[in-house]
Length: 328
Image (cartoon, helix red, strand yellow):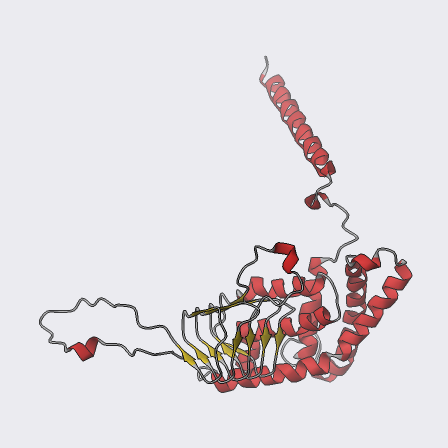
């Protein structure tokens, strides 16, 4: 067999294999499972939703995330156009998402589109309130973090501020019973910051996330005002073994006003209430309510010290405070 003939036979063999693989995968799509859906036009476009989030952040912080191609004397006109454009695009994504609500299956496309338009308008009417809350969050971050030299620094660089901003946007849509889109928004923030806040969580003013990585805040969590949370904190459910039967139930804790929760603490359960003016120390594991004004901490674990035998140390030099918390 000539070399050219061998190459031709090999190519035909590969082509046949590829064609067979393609047909096998296409047949697999016909199994009628959730993952087999291939209709791209009847679900929200994730990339469009993320772009809407980014544009909404421009609207909320016009001097920080503006389009650099516009000069300051064009800012007002640009913002007007931007608001109208985002409202239109959000309206269209909401109309697609509403189909996922069971009661919408019998509605006409015209009725669904009309409702989506109303929701988009109502959402944009809430923007001044969202900005009011974010101004308090910004102040809480500035007051609570001695490492923050400027408020601009917080807006432009703090992952906690970004996650809170996206959550406050998504929460408004969640309150308006919009399916899918709020979760896409908060998971976008989660993917960037490592901070997982469900859009259903209700969060009061002056909320400050310090550092932030690894924080989880569940759907039915209620957080009061002037609450400060450090990295690695979980506000979660005691158990999810009930699965879908637990849907819409209060599964996550309530955190009252003026509470500080240090790193690694886990507070679980829908009946768990952390009273106002309480401090929860690092790595605490809490499944019962805590009375207001309480300081919760873990007794020190036994520490082992290896030191130069030439240095004389007294016992008190090795002792740590029995009750403690920390600030960075």
